[in-house]
Amino acid sequence: MNKVFIIGRLTRDPEARTTASGISVTAFSVAVNRRVNREETDFLNIVAWRSLADSCAKYLVRGQQVAVAGEIRTRTYDAKDGTKRTVTEIQAEDVEFLAKPASVPNQAPPRQDEHPKPGKNDFAAEMDGLLVDDEEQPF
Image (cartoon, rainbow, N blue to C red; front, top):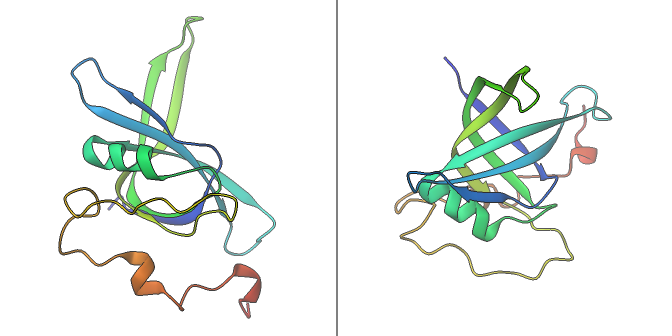
C-alpha cells in the first residue's frame, strides 16, 4: 500500500502550469516537522492535477498550513546537461486548506462545485479545537 498523510506549511507559493494536452498541474513544497525530533524538518514536494491543481493554485499561499493525502511517486528524467535525474514527490489526492499565515487576508473559500467535493466534510472544521500547536504536545 502506498498512502501518505502529512500536515505542514507551504514553503513557497504554488506554481501552476498546464500540460501540452491542457491538463492543469500545480506544484508546491511543504515543510513537515519530524514526529520524534521536532527540530528536524523535511521539505516534501507535492504535485496536484486537474481541478485539485486549480484550487491549490487559487487558494494556497506561502506559509499556509495544509493537510495532504496522496501517494509517493518516483520518476526519472534527462536533465538539460544530459544527466539522469530522479525525483520523489507526493501526488496529492486530497488537499485540505488549513490555517493561513497572519499576514495574509482571508480569501473566499472554494465554491462547492470546486474542491473539496460536495458531501465531504471539511477537515479543518472537523478538527476545529482538536488541532494543537506541536509545542503543546506532552510527548
